[in-house]
Image 1 (cartoon, rainbow, N blue to C red):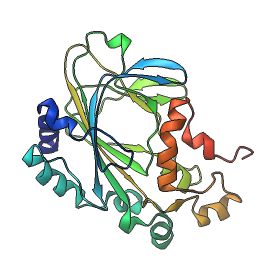
Image 2 (tube, rainbow, N blue to C red):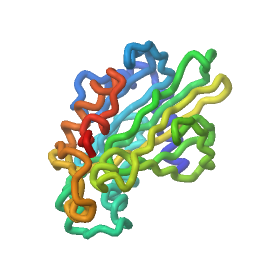
Image 3 (cartoon, rainbow, N blue to C red):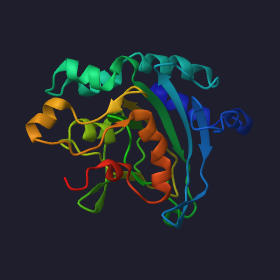
Length: 257
């Protein structure tokens, strides 16, 4: 785990021109670099304080050219089908899972976040409150706190030790489980003293998979609580909903459920 943290940190320490060659031009870019700025969410201006890069590593492998050791470390991690691992321990039929989510061609995303010391941490945020798309999100970090999780309307600091893996349930696991597993709402806060770096591996269904509640669970519950939607369509609508302050999950919940 330390190797991938160190390699990710080296990426963010590269000259600006090396990083900005991956500046996002299209949502479909396989590698996207971005830097903190002022965004408007739900008509409220928010100062973001982070750099990030997102790189799809499955079903096709993509990786920034530098630093060179990043590719080797990332390939070692991406060999594992984390989406399959994510649901393997659930007490559901394997055929139902594989058919519904098309796990052989599932997506896997490497997404490190870099939060340098912020001179006014009370005036900025690393990442606004959100839930993740996908099944499960695996997160490791360099030992600097900053991740908060919402529970019953209140925010709590997470205290996961360095070299541990924190696992968040995400939107599509909530949908596929017909609400049995809830997607975790979380955010990242910043500090004025130390650089925080986190590395996220997000995992989900195949882009063309229509994600919906699993049939055996619908039969047990007597109804589906979420509308079906292609995985890629869900991801594409997520940003526009966030800008309007809406939850993607709320948009596909069957409201009279």
